[in-house]
Image (cartoon, rainbow, N blue to C red; front, side):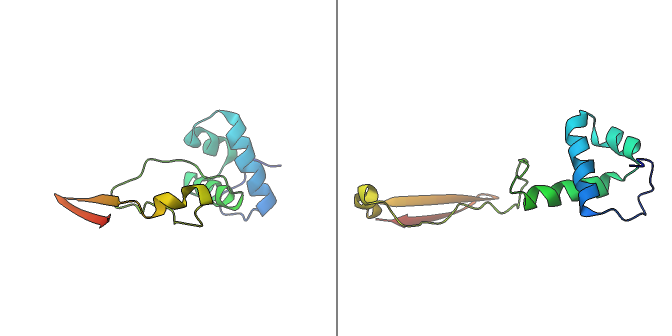
Length: 106
């Protein structure tokens, strides 16, 4: 494959999978790899995110202020834990700026 293509040329899904795979094995920074491959950093990062989401593999990143944090949902409780369902629960969420939200079940 010609690795000196300009970023203006369309690449197929299989080509992007191959490029992302080469990046993961190269041990280079994004900037170094993109210069070598002739792709933009933004385009490579776009395809890395897209392919990681479609494969179910998500990169971990540090949450930023304002990010949504999925706390999950309560599902079916196993029989051994049903006695705890009625137990008191307090959830406190620090919203920042000295503001907090507290929800209690007694």
